[in-house]
Amino acid sequence: MLYSLVLFLHIIGAVVMFVAVGITLLAMVSMLNSKTTDTLRNWAALAVKLDGLLPFSVILILVPGLYLVFTRWGWGNPWIEVSLALLIVMTFMGPIINLRRLKAILNAANAEKNAVPSAVLLEKVRDRVLWNSVLIMTMLALAIVFLMTVKVTIVGSLVAIVIAVVLGFIVASILLNRASTKTAISNKKTNSIN
Image 1 (cartoon, rainbow, N blue to C red):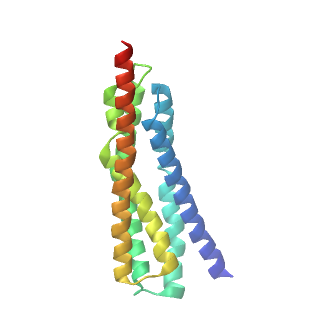
Image 2: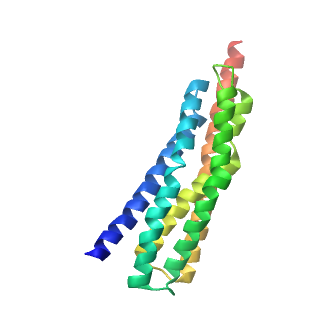
Image 3: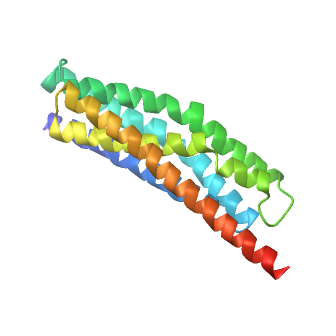
């Protein structure tokens, strides 16, 4: 019974993490497509607030997870050790890379005087480091779920990490390129009208 309860809490932690990451991605894509500064500001505020869910989810994942390791699985399983290392890396990536940049976007949006986001504000929203980090973290979270489910060897674990990182870069690049293309098309239309 205790094992099932602890496993349940561990899984709830993963669900909370995916909800936070999913809403953060929604907020970032919405900022990327915002036509007004107010809309961009609201999405940026949501993204900053959601950062508080990630440490909570890490606690919900880590505490029960360590209990499961010590009482059931033991150390020496590559999928456990790699997943733990990824979780620790992601715990630092969030506040060090993502939160700082999201706060900078929110501060710039709060300081923005124009109803339409300025080029400077949009440049902050299109920060490639932020997008790479958030999408790599998303893919690493999926990789952790893969490792926990399939329980692969160290080679399989490392391959899963490489695939996750590469996919994170690819998806970030696709989203940012689409946003740049939409902006260029919009600017051409505006210029041809004038």
